[in-house]
Image (spheres, rainbow, N blue to C red):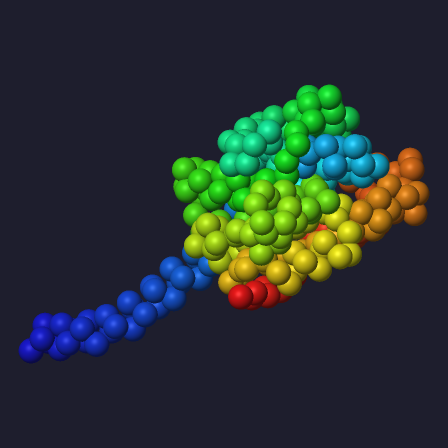
Amino acid sequence: MIRKSVRWSLLLLFPIWLATWSMSGCWSLQSGEPGKPRMAMFIGVDVSGSFMKSKSYDDSLDFLAYYIYVHLKGLGGAEVPKNLFVGSLGGRTLKEAKTFYPIQEFEDKSIDEIRTTLNTMFPKMKVNPLTDFNSFFEQVAATVRNKNLVLKPLNIILISDGMPDFSGSYGSHNYRRIKMDQMEALSRNITVRLLYTDAVTGQAWQNKIKRQRIRVWTQDAAVMQSWKEPKILVPGVPMDQQDKFFSWIKDNVDFNVRAHRVD
């Protein structure tokens, strides 16, 4: 009789134990280990003639060297990427495959060394005629699947004026032909950040490119070029103490934008 009573007690307690275990498991999966990098960062650099010959190009690579360094070191609370891939947005033809350089190319390097690495990857004498965002997005999607990064937060940085090149009757800058749908199912947390654009182009990216839950943030070249002003990047202050610069990055580049569905 006692054994029967114990058995019934265990049966009654089992659903409670199962619910508790399930909640604990969900909390663990959602929260993750504190400080453990999860984000995958993809950076595309526009190497088309129109952007490389602009006054923004050199400034953008200067900033990118600082930006990569800050994130790899986690300075000022910047999220450290678990994976980093850097490639070009330009090509000689549409749908041209890109080389994605991995995080190991930048780890344990100073800001100046990262800048030199970027110079080697994107030499100014090697100008391409086209800016091809669709091929870049397709390669991002393929890399995420091949590297088993599905469901990881994705931060996609585009260093570009944002003007795409297409052939055909639709016109060279038809933003409706930029396709992000191949990335929609990769993660619930995807942000595309277009830096060094202008107000009109930025508005087109915000309102004309079809997407479901992908977040899009754009920043004008005029704003981006203020990052190295002495009041922001303070001369003589060690890099790990550049609080104004870290705050500027959070407000102007790593802004936590809301999803905006565009049909």
